Image (cartoon, rainbow, N blue to C red; front, side, top):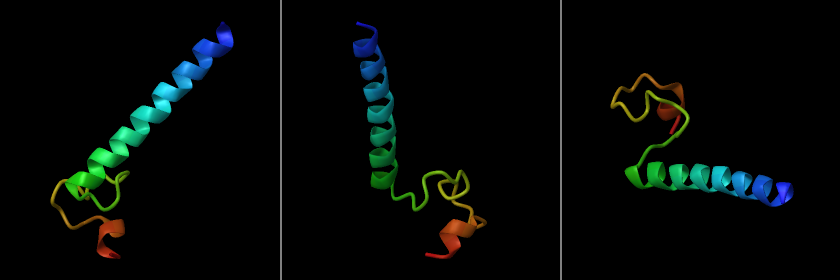
Length: 50
């Protein structure tokens, strides 16, 4: 029973991460981990390289 609960918790965490990535990519964010890329500023080094 403990293993089942652990597996379900891990699946929920992974599912939430995948949903976050999909939603951000639909918004057009180039690098999801960078808070400056979605703010409209061009001061993000990862956004400048693309």
